[in-house]
Length: 406
Image (tube, rainbow, N blue to C red; front, side):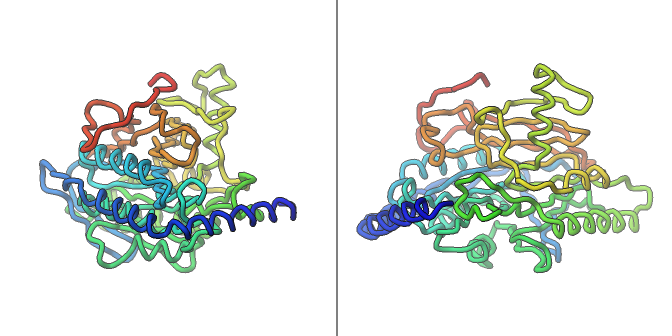
């Protein structure tokens, strides 16, 4: 970035800081109002007994001989400031409606829970966003896990990744399954959630990874230079796949390789490679790519992946355990592709705040539902739009334009 642009940005930030400080009493009232709003929702009622996980050294373990259901949410973008009150409430209303209807065993949020961009949110304080969403999830009474996105701890935010991690992993929380992860692995929030049967066999493992934020000097993200999953994380993944498989075979030598899923924020380069192969074949399947659902709707159908090559996808192929990966980041890319045998899923987003005018659009807003059967096999992945009748919200849904066919 040039010195001129840095000076302009510095001046702009100074104006926003001064303006935000003059609104501090109003901001405090708005924040309190949104905390009260988060607490106003009803607890999710489960038809059967709710599964309760047990903490272990890697993360958490659920035990069941039955099915398992996950709801993926992504890019909720709570601003948490004086400018974003209405849009924050719309986002919380949508999150509550979908979780309440789906009644999942686990909610996984793949990053960008927060969006403390001052000229849109009215604050630099990213703690407000996280704490508001935590309050909502705890009120709903569902188990939840998160990975961080690029907006959760911006360069200019008041709280860094370590501080935000302390909020999501606080001891007093009843339903958060967040873990910081091993100190010798890059990133904050690399951890595992397992599903075992009553014989102690791990049927499923969910790998949650920090895909980091910006790189190559692009600390403000204005050059679209996004980071990648690091070698230490890939090695951590590899060692855990091998260790879980070995533990299973110690109990039952003939047990097949367990099914795992991976969750992160910034897409792998293979997302764009798969879509381009499909697109260049006239939007028809190829030997490598099967289009299951959805579409890429970012400008030029682009996937904004990390800028450097990495070997995570190749490692997943080599080991054979991971059947699907789930990300967010690109709010208008909502798709399921099967690439070389692994499902690459761009989850439905929530965002009412970040993209200009997106609060008036609805085709991209929703959740992703993942069903695993009693044997641990991946049974179904569906992209679910929020504006379906089955998602009954406590507060009225806004009127939106469905900007493309569902």
